[in-house]
Amino acid sequence: MQTALTDISVTVLGAGMVGVCAALELQSRGAQVTLIDRRAPGQETSFGNAGVIARSSLMPLNNPGLWASLPKLLRNRSAGLRYSLPFLLRNMGWAAGFLGHARMAPFLDTARAMDGLINLSYPIHKQLLAEAGALDRLRETGWMYLYRTSAAFEGGAFGRDMLDQFNVATEVLDQTGLRDLEPGLNPIFERALWIKDAMSVNAPGRVVEAYARLFTDRGGRIVRASIASLTSLDGHWLVNTEKGPFQGDRVVVALGPWSRTFLERAGMRVPMAYERGYHMHYGGPNAGGNLSLTRPIYDLAGGYVLSPMENGLRMTTGVELTDCDALPNHAQLNLVEASARQAIDLGERRDPTPWLGRRPTFADSRPVIGQAPGRAGLYLAFGHQHVGFNTGPGTARVLADIMEGTTPDIPAEPFSPARFIR
Image 1 (cartoon, rainbow, N blue to C red):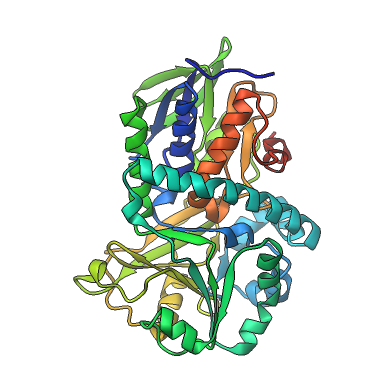
Image 2: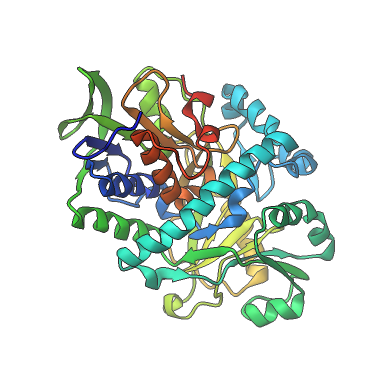
């Protein structure tokens, strides 16, 4: 049954990329939207990513290639993945499901679903960047996977085959081709894969801020407040905050990694884990205007991504599986920094302390998008692992279609909250 959103009141919880895009999309369909977060838009998980919007992100961490590297990863000393054993023991169901979805058949289900969501998001991002006056932050130069040896390149054949299967535009480069495109890199890489179906931005947090300004310029309301609880009341939803209650016909929970704790306080079961990661900026005093890279690069052996940002080169680390609010552990950052210094003249650290982000992840590496099971009017949009910034606009489009009762442009079933939420 179709339900027009005109004049329906919607409260969106969470002002990251997903929440801001949801607010914009629902607003465009006539809803009266209030966006609530404890911090300003784009200041949590969406702030610290590598700024990459790429079709290659259809490949989740738990893909069939994980099995070959598992013995090394289990030693818990790698740059790409670290884990807390107590956390995994407390979340054994998630861990078993995560490994189970690295088999070919479930992996392909996820790859197809995520490819659809990324493709849906791509043009909406460009539209929103233009409407928000932020196109100057966009680069359409793609990004690169770097291989230090030819053997490592050959070992990545599965991933390249998958990208070919999904018609992702790429180009293999030798040392000369890589030097022509990125002369700032030291000649330690024998091969590279240029992902051409990719864009990047020079300040992810600023992009979310620009989208949020677009929302308020169009009449939307943003409230800075800590969110305490959620209550169903006479067919409406009451969001209790430090600034008092907010009532809406419908509520969207887009709190990213904090969605689990929030919803469990409301009596729901949310079997979600956290792929935490760190970043640091590097460069001299004028690094923002004189960067040695022209696009993001991923050093597969080094386990880091380097992205040119407005305030220097941003280095992002791999995955740390642990509790959402565990104390920071900078071992991965220190390890990958040493590798990055082999690849490029990083310069000095520019941040007083490393940034820590939390990437919410379900066992199948797909987000939940849709109505919470058995809770009319409560909608969920979180669990995007590493690609929430990338797929925020597509998530918002699918969610709004579900709320209206119309058929989304891509299949919504792979993202059904009923997969995990109880």
